[in-house]
Structure formats: structure tokens, C-alpha cells
Image (cartoon, rainbow, N blue to C red; front, side):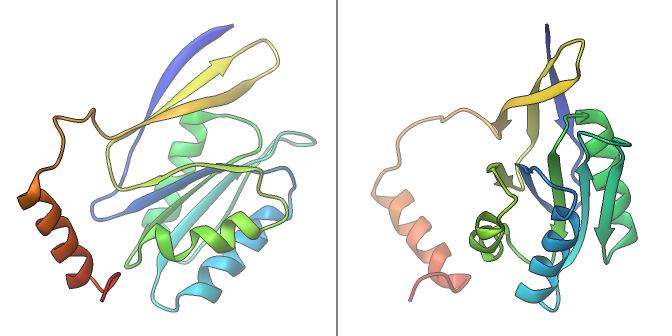
Length: 160
């Protein structure tokens, strides 16, 4: 077995949701979740099928995000993984619905940070072991940092 890291390429201003699922129907269910949750979201989804023809199944409403999702799915190459690239919305608005999708097994991450995917490769194929999301902590927040965090959450409408 060989371990690799795959750097996810995020188009400017986009976020990513990376997860694992188990059924071909997932691509259509994820599409419905995205458009059903937000009318303005722009997104592309790529799902790596793990049996049968082993194709990368796709859906979305933005050609650039769809192309980037496919490129990232090809680079990761792990069966039954999916990647959603989105713009004009935040992952937090979609995560509960995605987690409730019966085929979804787990979410590895939802982020706009630089992202590396840790992939194990064997003779059978590839699997995702985990992710490196962003950077390591540089310290512990102080009173000014707490105030800035709370102000930001109120500014973007997540807290009153």
C-alpha cells in the first residue's frame, strides 16, 4: 500500500464539501439537495463510482465548478467518494441535508481553506484516509479575538 497526498484545487471564491457515499443514485440526490436548499448557489458535483463501469458521475449548474470538481475527483480517484464545489453559498447551509441523504456515509470536510486529501492506494484501488484542512493553530484566542469572532458571526447573520 502506498500513501499519497492530493492537493484539492479550489476555484477562486469557492468552498468544497468532500464525502463518502455508496450508491449511484447519490449524484442525483446531492443535486436535488443543492438546488432545493438554495436558489442562488452555483455548484459542481463529481462522484467516483466504485463498481460496474467505475465512472465519475457528474451534476451541477456551473460549468467551471463542474470541471474543477471532475478534475479533483480524478486526482483523488477514491471509489465512492464525492466532491462538491460551491459558490454564492456556504457549506453550513447544506451539511445537515447532505448528512441526512441515506447513501452518504460520512463527510470528510467542508472548507474554503487549502485542502490536502490523504489517500491510500492498493492493488484494488484508492481510499480516503482523511484530510488536512488549512493550517495548524498559531496560538489560543484572547479577549480581542473572541470579540472579533462574535462580531463576524453577527455581521454575516449566523448569530443575533
